[in-house]
Amino acid sequence: MDDDFTEAVLEVVEQLPPGCVATYGLIAERLGRGGARQVGRVMSLEGHSVPWWRVVRADGSLPPHLVVDAQQHWRDEGTPVRNGRVIVKDALAPDF
DNA sequence: CGTGTGACTGGGC
DNA sequence: GGCCCAGCCACAC
Image (cartoon, rainbow, N blue to C red; front, top):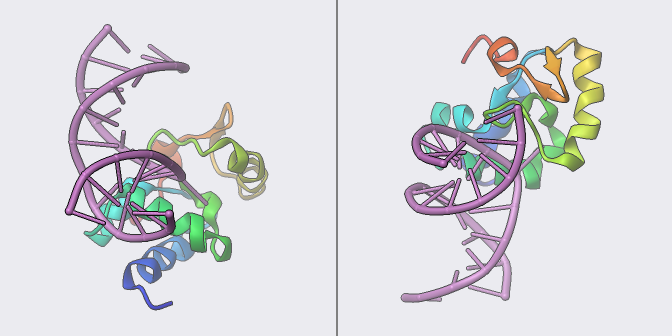
């Protein structure tokens, strides 16, 4: 991992407690750099090694190809979900 | 160096 | 609730 930004994003995601989530934009603001899209780019590249299902969009949804797998993890961890979307206001990690 | 693109977001209809 | 659009930032061509 040579890029600080990439490392920082993965760090935050790994620290998200089970049953909790964070949004792309929130993570980007916490890092104070780049933007929501940059966080998304990192997830597409290195997200495979972190609990990516705990990172969702501002509206609590996720792209179709990921929602399928994510739903199973959410149900397994007891993450508040409704209609295939996480209830961000309830599942948002305590640190945020 | 200009253009297109994406695991995004907020505002408007 | 949904869809569409403009703004956003880094990266590949």
